Length: 96
Image (cartoon, one colour):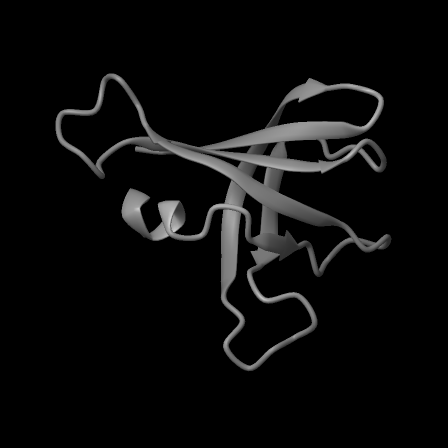
């Protein structure tokens, strides 16, 4: 996938179908990394989710169309928790 594809999906919800407790993340940012030699090569994604349950750093499957729609897309992303407050947690995925 390329940065432009994720930029077109800002605000979209993703569900984690393998979780025991239903969990949805929202794509908040999609940005090129400063060290990228050219646009679309290295980029980061920032997701926001609920304060609980907290995800640990790891590989997760995300489904782009909650509810099992026929056009649902499954992604496997390595998510890293980067921030939290009383209302939400934020996770980052890096593509390089």
